[in-house]
Amino acid sequence: MDTQLLLKTAMLAGEIMLRSGAETYRVEDTMHHILKTADHIEMAEVLVIMTGISATIKLENEKAVTVTKRVEERDTNLKLVVDVNEISRQYCGDDLTLEQAYEKLSTLKQFEFSRKTTNLAMMGVGVGFTIFFGGSIADTGAAIVVGLFLVAFVSAGQDLKFHPFIQDIFAGFGVAFACCLLKEGLGDQMNMDTVMIGSFMPLVPGMAITNAVRDTLRGDYLSGGARVMEAFLKALGIAIGIGIGLALCAKIF
Image (cartoon, rainbow, N blue to C red):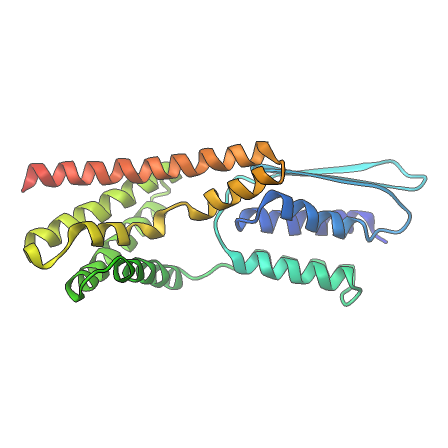
């Protein structure tokens, strides 16, 4: 078996999962199962933290080989997590060769949802939560308009390559400002609190908070603490943006 290719396959699987929002213990478990398929293996160790992956493998009568990969960008794409899990199961179950598994993972790495799909989903989440929180027909229509503002501000932040923290402030400002404008136009027909809360729900770091709890309960305190800090900073950015938007609207109106 090609040890280098095995390490590359395990590292690629771990990188995709970590970038896509998987828990660190799940990434370690998947990589460990892949590495354990090597012939005459003496040791296989994997260490995953929020910003990097390290894997070591040692075969009989050979020196240990260690590979480290830094992961700087993270997003939420649970489809990729499921796909990597499925490929790893097929490989460990001898349904795929090592070369086939690496090829499939290489294809997955290039997969991303289109901006149009992401924007529609973001708007749909905002409208759905507005209805969930008891919004009226007028509130639902307002949530659609606010969703357009949110999509525009998020897309502008991405195109301008803002830092993620600044992007959250920018998006929060867009939601608050749009809600204020609509409230000024619709008056009592619109419940501003319901529309605003529902509209910024797509920005809430729910995945980071959930993974922080899961990693902490599994004993991975380093990654759990890092995810808590990540969620806190994201929530702080949203709150600052909304505060700036409300303050500006109070001055204007």
